[in-house]
Image (cartoon, rainbow, N blue to C red):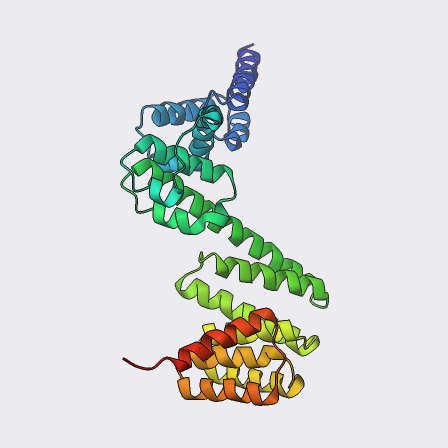
Length: 300
């Protein structure tokens, strides 16, 4: 009888905890529900201790992770929607963090996090240095979550690539993902070196297999970013031999000489392009015009 009584209490507690999580009455993560299920009484007591600790601030707010951020998001959502019809001054989000208005700063960061945080990573990085500890917490948690998300996507893509090495679309998807990841600036130090090395390796394979101009461009720019100047120059010369009349290798050569601060050779390249009458797109014309103006400037 005692066992039946405990099971009845246990299942009743499970229903209450589930309802509390679904209606956002409890701060606990839904992932704790299996723990409660498999640990009758003990599981409930552990979760209650965590819940009481989080509400009384005895536990670190960082332990709540995105759960707290999502709950606060919901609390502020109606406030933000209600204000849409008001004629409040429009404040750029970068400037909002500098204002002495904690409420506005928090509303802005919460509004930002409801959108696509990856598109505003530079703003989130700045928010990490804000004086408002809650803004810093939201920004830091969002950045860490983005980092973990990309880490998981890269692991999954790596496994997919291992199983489908001969599929050109899988190769392209893998390259795009690594380029997107590096573009957000999430990788640093040794991690960045490893990602960039894999990115270069994949592009080398794509250049070898397809040999298209766009793959050459991405590989050359990757080699320049990795300070592999000799290899970048070799690839540019290879492009020039393949497509002597196209603008792509010439523009990359201009970028290369600019990066290397070789002004004389850059000037020679511009002159050679003019003599050979290389066809230029609108973007190519702007690039050539910019560097031509730079060369014409006289030292003061």
